[in-house]
Length: 206
Image (cartoon, rainbow, N blue to C red; front, side, top):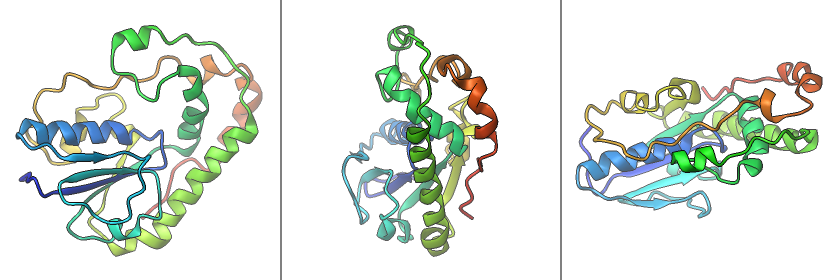
């Protein structure tokens, strides 16, 4: 890969899939090569490629970006039950992402009862997100790279290999995995786990 200041990246996922970790690695790789791309966060709706920019989006209506053959596109996927649980847990963590041990050590695990209405809202949104990509987007750009959370959750440096990057530079701010587990966070876990395991988990976008 030969990075240039005119490159455009689109990193897309329904949220809580590790897409921000991928963004950080791409940004760090370019910075290592003295190239500083602009960053468009998911809060900003973008529907067309932007030269010299990393577009991070959770919106599936960004079709012009996904159809652009010059844009480097990564689709970030994750087990839909796990990502939906992560959405529900996030508000109890108090931060979208943890980067320092200080943040990590200050996360207090207080068990809560999972609100199924909230959970299914996130789950349904993820399901519709992937189905839309499958039906409307992927067919237009066969060169899309799909990176699943399981490929880098235990070693985020694997992202460099998945992107065919030989030298990504040193990374001083690797995101930290949230402490605890659904079993530790959710007080009614034993009552709901059977129902959760019946749900479709693996997204299909090819």
